Image (cartoon, rainbow over the protein chains, first blue to last red):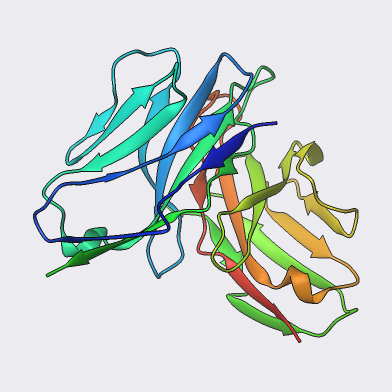
Length: 118
Length: 114
């Protein structure tokens, strides 16, 4: 079984600052995927960014980027030029490679509540 | 392009009762997964349905059961409700032939047990 740990229950930064959210995971799998999801008060889980474990290059999506350290089993999310709309719960999630097709169930961390102050 | 839809939005039940939650996957998706998110916690995987069968299951008791219909929509049933079943129940969908793609989530059903 795999576990995902997010050690920062809450973080607060000023608008336009850069913030980094931490995530570590434990697994015996060699092929897997990592995700960051955002959950605003509206409750819908929204995909922020995805990283394939077999790729050495860190994923980026506009203001969002990750620092993936496979040997250290670390997967942090950096948000640049933070905006008020970035205020939300952020969840790190692990998914092992689905051999039989489709997508396996996700294992989530407990989340980090990110607050962007005006 | 319709996203994942769940009903009802909010539900109140008492201990011992049974409940059914419903989910329609995103248009074009054929696989449905269910998650339980307790207050202040991350979602926990309950089970996944594909081709009307349970394909994968997390660490949840048999009180939690499901069904998938030919149109790919799904139901989550919980029997003998406990106070600890109070949570947000999230449905997520994906397309089986696209391996390892991210899942798309609905807005969830908030279940409160009195």
